[in-house]
Each structure stands twice: as structure tokens, then as C-alpha cells.
Length: 82
Image (cartoon, rainbow, N blue to C red; front, side, top):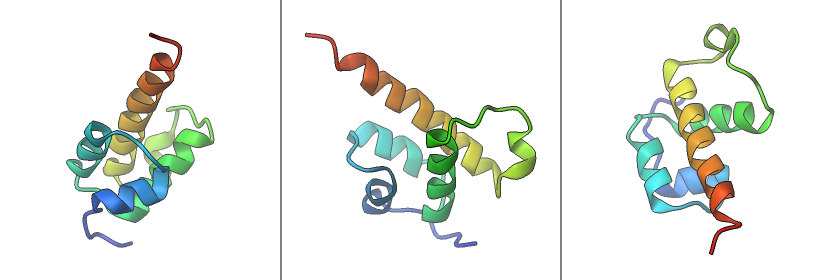
């Protein structure tokens, strides 16, 4: 597995356009682009947390998935406001 830390461009390449705070939070985990992609697949696939720890390639995947869940859900909540 690629262990080089992902760049902000790499994060946006995987998850699409998102705010800078979300990118910074993901980058701060030290995850690789592969780990971010794995976390994003788990997030978009609707995987629940049960037994997730045993199936992922690293703890960073779970951390990034949690950040995605929190950050992207917050973005959805903002759509209807104003």
C-alpha cells in the first residue's frame, strides 16, 4: 500500500470538490491517497461500523471515513439554509 501522505489535490481527486477545512482534517490524519479512496468507498457504500476495523487496511481509513461522514453530512445540512 502507498504510505505517502495525500496532498490536498489528491483528496479532491478522490472525493470531489469540498471545503478547505475538510481537506485539512483529512490531510492531518497522515492517510495516503489509497487510504482516502478506501474510506470514501466505505462511506459512499453505506458500510456501517460493525466489524469495519477488521476489514480495513489501516486505522487511518476509519478515521478518514468518520471525518467524511461528519463533514459531508454537515455540508448536506447547509444546503437548505439561508
